[in-house]
Length: 324
Length: 277
Image 1 (spheres, rainbow over the protein chains, first blue to last red):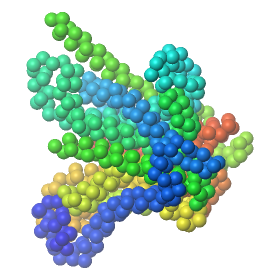
Image 2: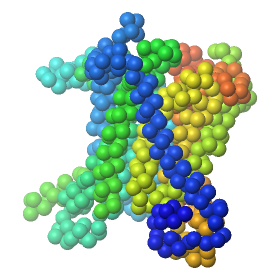
Image 3: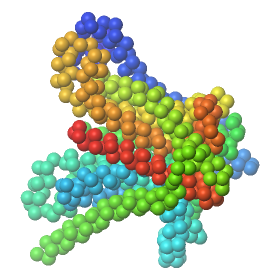
């Protein structure tokens, strides 16, 4: 009883040992603690089950499973290389597209938009985050893919394809579906998350230091760039990491637009696959207990580890700043 | 002076570009909604709600998928809400500055953003493989894992808004913690907690990936929780990728339905939150 109550935050609450709750209170507090522990165990279980499920594949193919680029269901030889590459490549494209947009929109929402418009516009942009992933997938597949194939990719291939070095990014037929399209769709999906956290960070900048900068004659943009953004830099990096973490695990939208090829290519237009899209696509064809199923579970474990690291890092950066 | 002119020009340019970026984001939202309306509305009709999924050309609807989704979401809520509510309360009341509280908060944040397809894989391993098949129960369990972190987060946030003095006053009257929590703090934060549950419903309603290997989908009428169960997102996924025009049209109708529902829930909950803060 004493131990549980002394766990409460406020010292004033500790004196609450009163007869009315002699029996019921320990039960209630026990349920509260139990639920907290349950969530801890839940995450532990998820990690453990994915690890255990994928272990046979890791034992079969060895540690080179992580980077081997062979994925051949016929000969039953599997490796995660192509999917790990596709996952990171498409997520990085998404962040590269979303980042400047988020910087601009956050600037607009915190410094430019008239007070009465701030909230409605902010909410509308947040609604982009509420639209389910499968809707993005359909929209991307039926609307964006044909546009990319007809109007975006051919001129880029003609213009940039022949160039040395960066030309490698613009090779192949204009299929519409591929890495760039997947990155583009995911950019729209993670944009609201990054923007919302940017705005939150920028609003926590003490008005005094911004006013000091205005006082010496800085323009709005100069204050944003040289005062507000540097002030919130750590948390903003965390916000970007959160966007990256979300993009890494995105499934349905990517499955529709990435082309689902298990080949590796450096081209932005080449069809590819991510870990999540491969699991979604190939799971139905994997028999229980088969090596393929175990390889898919191992892919899941790898994705979990990557997302966990990125999300944990993001949280560390965001919390450290917002608390301080 | 020319340097001042240049700085002003830069400032102006950045302002224009930023405003354009915001306009682009709004246009994207409008574009997605517009696509849903022009493709989904013509496919809408009573048959969507009165007929079950049928072979292409047979004039089927989405009744079994809608009912399946509702059942799985309802069960997910019944399981997930109490756990989420209790855990959120634990974080706000008992675990505020404790190490275990911080650990739970961290884990919950990870669960909130973790790839949802992995939750499907996890449930496949603990409920589908050992019990011999895909089932509505497994789908509901996967959705419950989606629901829990959303409820935990909003509950904690909302309880943190309740002034500490309110709790102190109740404790000073000799109330035990369960009474303080249920009759004072929960009551004060009631609207916010309900909002969290609405957001959890919105989140669960659109999730496709966790259902792929749990409830699988079902093209016939079935309320049996022990066998595969249809759901709206899975039906949309299956139909959108099909080569049949009437199936694709039905997928758009379903997509419109889900999006309208999810956005309504989101706007509603934001209105409630705006009132509270």
